[in-house]
Image (cartoon, rainbow, N blue to C red):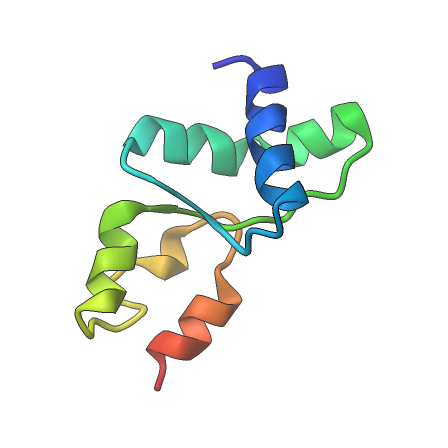
Length: 87
């Protein structure tokens, strides 16, 4: 996936008011999350949107902890979700 495509995905989510992006594709999750920093440098943006793999979200939905969902392994931290999972 090209950086311009990734930028379009993040930008659409940001413009739509999304607090996170969730994907069923682990490669997509990695690409969209990891490249945010280089996209910010290249395009002068300030994206900082957490990107989760759907199983992470499902773990939390079924009562799992942030640690069980491996949220600490994400590059862009899902702080609101971590706080929710901590309760």
